[in-house]
Image (cartoon, rainbow over all chains, first blue to last red; front, side, top):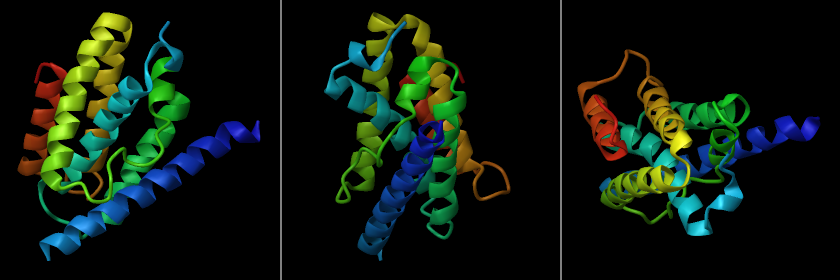
Length: 31
Length: 143
């Protein structure tokens, strides 16, 4: 059953990191 | 019942890009980057929840996104245009292939937009509300 819960946790990490990296990149462009 | 196998890679990417892009669109709408951690966290948390508690099997699958679906070099305009275009094409696609999933998909997308808009506290700003109105329009949803 562990996999059922591991997958969302991994996805949450990936998207949060990916989104923050993109925000940082456009923030730098604007700055 | 629609599943991942009913869609091409390109179609599936558009379904997920419309979803993640909607959260990003709301986040960048007011150009306030001071709480990017909170908003990125809200986006991830909402999608993680929908992977388990989504309305249908299809919705739970669509919510299993990896990354944002956009490149790091995408401009804000590119994210906005590609998100709205993905939403329009995805709704048309679902109407043709899986009409029962149109409303759950709309609800999922609007849900992620609301989750990001509320992430800062203090409710939804006027600018964020305008971004959500654009998303609703692209989805063909009533205001």
